[in-house]
Image (tube, rainbow, N blue to C red; front, side, top):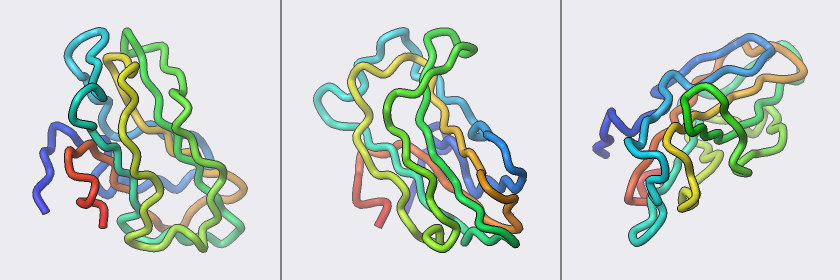
Length: 135
């Protein structure tokens, strides 16, 4: 599998503290209203790179957010509920969805660790034209 590094939000991003964490990269789509979903869909893939573990009943919520100015971000409605650590095994695809055409210029993923801290776990998030790349 070949991924364009310019289209990656997270590459084996590891977070452990009970808090909201922004993806390593905020993607700049280059224009204010890129209309990215028109024509050929651009797929967002979020998957577990390394299994999540915790000494408690940890959960992780995944949220896709956008912004017009790279400072005031808001959820675009691509938000999971709290996913239990037992579900977040290596290779698990958390989200594989086409980006909406209405997305604004700047896009990031927010990983929110709840209930308990993690002792391990890593996440990948990226854009692709091939939705089968997540398999």
